Length: 115
Image (cartoon, rainbow, N blue to C red; front, top):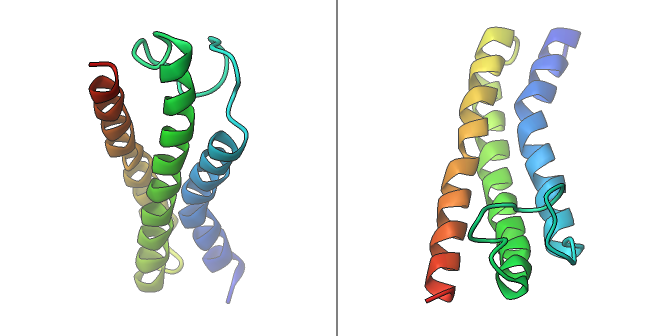
C-alpha cells in the first residue's frame, strides 16, 4: 500500500474518528453546567439544566452512531477508490452531512421531553 492510498484512507476515516471522539467525550464526560462554549448548544438544550444534561448525553450517543455510519461509508468507498484524493474529499463532505440526522433526532427528543 502506497503513501497516497494511506492518505486517502486517513481522509476517509478522519471525519468518523472525530465524531467518535467527540461523541464519546460528550457521552462519558458531558459539560456539567449550561454554557456557550462547549457541548450541544441549541436554544432548546440550553432552556434548563434538565434539558442540558439530557441533550449532552443523547447527542453524544447520536454522534457515535453517526461516526459508525461515517467510518463504514469511508472504508467502503476506499475499497473501490483507494488512491483518489478528490473522491476522498467529496466523501468527507458527505460524511460531514451525516451529523444532521443526529441533530434532528436530538432536537425532536428534547421537544418531546419539554412538553
